[in-house]
Image 1 (cartoon, helix red, strand yellow):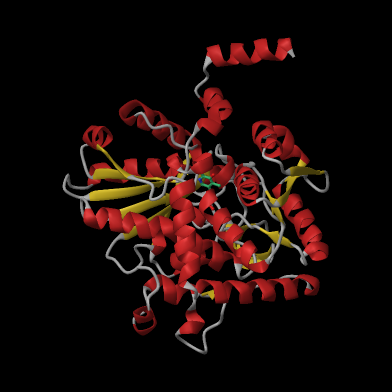
Image 2 (spheres, protein in one colour):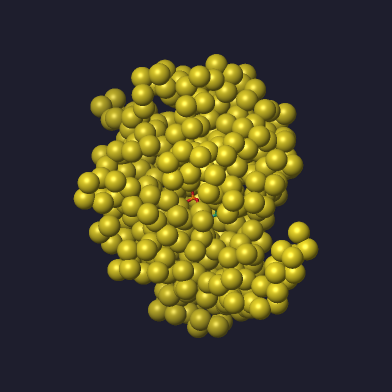
Length: 430
Ligand SMILES: *Cc1c(COP(=O)(O)O)cnc(C)c1O
């Protein structure tokens, strides 16, 4: 499925979706239906145009994709395997369940795919410094890892509240050589870190690249991130086709939307149902959730440089979001997924905190796999559907990451006394 001259004659669905102007001169570049766009202050607009031009040239050069695949195979265990979950499938008594193992990547999640890709683009642009914003810290760790690997200077912006909450990730970013800037403005969380990061970029774009972490933000970021992450779907489709056969449906969790988009792009042209799972938190009716495409709490709007569904109140103020998994707790969603949802190509569901934790336990118990709490939202969605399907049908789930990072949250949620005592002893020792 890699781009060949033939692709121009008969483009794959993902090519028409990401690069509509290659096939239709009247199409709007950077838009997915009504969503997307590039709404940035004038000072940044030139930078976005420069990045758009560099990426547009780079993606047409097959050497870039080949280099990307090669780096990922020697540095990040790609292609990641697909695992048949025999015991879990047996337990549920329905469809055969398969996992795409993004948890086996370097740094333990799919985020590294995108940052390595952007690192290769930086080389082409001759930029020596990378900046990024991070909420839970996972994207910060992935970016710091890439910077160390490519010998780049790295600054990570993080809200002061998140710096306190996510100390282990801050520790690793610093050990990997990054400077972590704690942002005290506003609510001192992700959105404030984004603002500070953009402020830095406005003055540093000459030598600095902003490595956005998900398929959101102003054009060309959604397009670029989706293009690199499609490696997941491309591999998974080939692995299923050569092995058990294509699945009836594919599940992925949806935070900003990068792992889901990357997975779904591989199956757009197939008769395969695509299901995105959002964080239902304490339940959609509780108001404490992060579901944008399920339920009625989100509305289309423009913020943070692009148009999509945002969780906002009547006055357009951003709502507080909640999820047990830090990576799904975001107010916006990829404009690509918003469009695929509107057109009915992707179905969205919400899974509660409790369901995601139950799915994590079942996955550990039956298969010995510790999934990230984000990813076990997708597993929980599949657990609901599998029993309604036949034994010769297949579900493929994208396991976006591994759960070691969630030890504090999981031990808390499971009420593990020995762990609590361990924390108290360490606290007294300090
Ligand atoms: C960050 C993260 C997510 C959510 O981000 P997407 O852009 O929606 O993929 C999901 N899973 C894991 C393991 C993550 O670290």
